[in-house]
Amino acid sequence: MSAQSAGGRLFRWTHSAAWLSAFSLLSVVGLCAVSAFMLWQLRNHAAWQSEITSRSLIQVLGRDIARNIELYDLSLRAVVDGMKRPQVMEASPELRHMILFDRAATAAGFAYALVLDRNGNVIANSQTLGPMSINAADREYFRHFADGVDDGLHISAPIVSRVSGQWVLTLSRRLSNPDGSFAGVVTGGIQLDYFRNLFAMTGADRAGTVTLYGPGGTIAMREPFVQSQIGTRVAESVSYLEMLKRRSGSFVGPAMIGEGDRQFVFTDIGDYPLQLSTAVPLTKIYANWQGEALGLGSVVLSLCAVTMLLTWLFGRELTQRRRAEEVTAALNLELERLATTDALTGLCNRRRFDEVLAREWRRAVRTQQPLSLVLLDADYFKGFNDRYGHQRGDEALRLIARSIEATTDPTRDITCRIGGEEFAVILPDTDAEGAKLVAERMREAIAGWKVPHVANPHGILSVSAGLAQIPQTPAADPAALIAAADRALYGAKSQGRNRVQIAGQSEAGLRIVAQSRIG
Image (cartoon, rainbow, N blue to C red; front, side):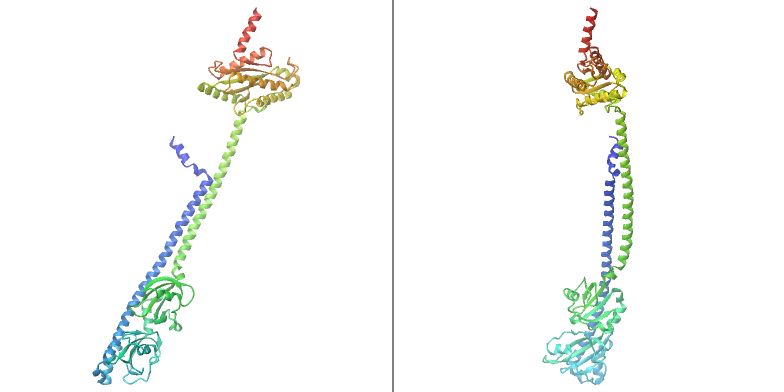
């Protein structure tokens, strides 16, 4: 096998429009799938980047807030400890104020510190040396300690301070008598503006919405800042309930205030009942990705469209070429048929006869199977043409051709017109006896039409036939077989025509006739 033929078979599919279209479609689908995977990865990367940015921000804010609350708590503890010492309470108002509220005065964002007696009246404060006519018995933090024995730090929801008139986050601790009974409350307020300034310094506005939640899901601070949202309770919202399930993490959920979904990143602030979260709209997260996806998608779709268009054009060209090749092949077959077919009778012509006889002769010699050849000739046909004209003569030849075809097997036997009124029939795998029966049927079929022929002694159109068969008749080549059949045909004509003669028998008969004439 040559490399050229092997390569031709290997790439034969490229000449098929269907295979080319399938391969092109597979390539387009593959390209779209790879592009879609890349876009999905870029989308995930955009979400991941947003989450990393938000997580870093709330970690920084959470540490600062927790550290400052711890400092504020130390100030409250100092007041609690000072109130337990009799010498502090016996000191002058100036000294007592300095001892109790020195730390509170230096704490950034700390609005005030108050000491309340067991009835909720202010008995000392960090703002003035004198008394303050304020009662806080109705405040949540006061009731919390008055009704219980909690000695820890208590953080309340944001409220409007009665001291400053501003929003504050209240921190408080319990004052106890030596016997453990309730003696009052030490409380302090962290200005919510402190958290607002802290958010601004860390660039929280670049991370969507940053929210600090106080106890009970109350909004303590929110950036971007909207005054009316401070103190809003969101404890029943789906996203806040999701945040309460774990100390930190991220998820996508509905906005607590507003419409649409958000990517939430959240964390608890230390061990305090405070949460901090960022909420970024998905449209903001994927804004850049959508631009990239649109650009890449447009390029990929354009390439796919161009590929499909070129495939369609190439496929159409292949189809047209295939059709042209089919038409050419059909024309070649028709030309070959015309080149090997007798125009008058439709039988094979002399060229086809020579090709088939040579092939069948080689096969018969190789396989040692019999091969018979029958030559037929119309009797006194010149006289028929002279008497009835050439048109009637052509009709007679066509009649002979149809009679020969009707008495032979078209799947095996080859019928030919090899001359003016001479016909030949090649009978593969047929011995002399079988060939003679076929030849007799042909002769009888032609005579059976009883076409008038006054120039023929028999009075009708008739044929004579000569038959030769190998290996019965020695024939060194196809020409020798033709010569033997031709001699048998001559013998049939010599013995009166309208008969069939077998090669060998006719020669013997000729010798007998010749001897009788000499005698």
